Length: 222
Image (cartoon, rainbow, N blue to C red):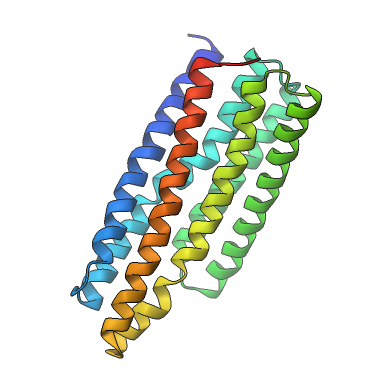
């Protein structure tokens, strides 16, 4: 087994954990939005949801260096050993940052770390759009169209993930209403609306993931 084969195996494992855990998050959110649940029950489900959501978050970060390393080994992406080492180090640093956000959730430090993580996501989104979009237009530095398209779609996935964060922010005020016992029917309706918007965005993200998997497997165009 060579380096490429090992990375390909890891790529498959990360994809499986990403999509599989996302299903768990999806159905936990559906359960959390069920009318009639108490505030405490919803918070227990939310805690489970946030823990399960770590798997897709880890997978998104690690699949980036894995995929680009594979592209450098087999598909002509001009990244030398130094650039690949820097890519892996940066990705590990991002992973540590993301896990620190989870560990420090609810604290002032956690909020600062969350903002730093958001900045990294916007940076990666921009770089992938420029890299993939530029390659589709000019044929360089990624010559294969299917691979350049995957890079662009990775940026789309990050954008959808950011949209999910904005949507999920709608949980907090509704949950606060439930906790205080204020206008419970309106709060439950707000939770249901938030969950429905999140479901549409999550399904869109899964569709993009499946297209990326198809492109990587079939490689339908040069």
